[in-house]
Image (cartoon, rainbow, N blue to C red; front, top):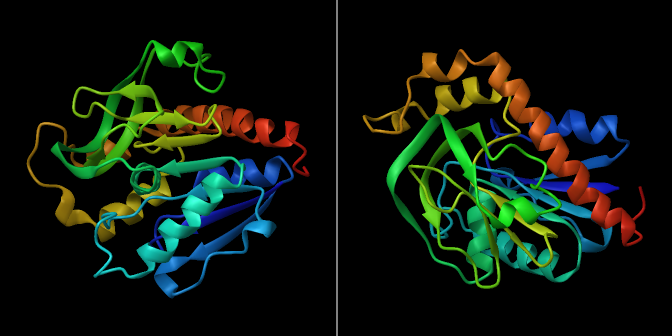
Length: 239
């Protein structure tokens, strides 16, 4: 399967999903939007991954490439391929699907519990996961649930943490299951100003000292990615 990802900053790559893709024999290519690269041709993409980043979906004047990126995401959603958005990526999907993206009441930065919704218990992607688990968060914005989307997860600090759309072919995750300690270290170095006082903001030491949590999150990310891409393979996408 040819998996393509959209990257918004140099320090936030696909993390554990790179290892997952290679171990499963998938081809992984990238568009580095921050370097002025244009998105790939959709006919060369079997699944799309939209990564996170410190910018906001409504900052087109600061980051003009957001305009073209949103068009590409819309076309990808309409092309019947699996689409996964993480953090900013989830917000971009929500925006493209007509939902509002805006400042959350709280910043959420650190390891905090997630609770799956009742709808998630019926999901082929999320139904086998624990009803509650701890995930790594780094966001100040949130989104309304897009029309016709299914609410999957919530946290104490943010109601809409995950959703699925179009029979679970499109997935938005506000949290970071794919991050490694290396990505978190680079994000702490580049975005240290985000660590302001807050109920849901942890220190860098609190975040970095959780090696087992990274490993568990990466395992959960692999499970979701396995099931999401399996649906694409059943539809005849090459492996």
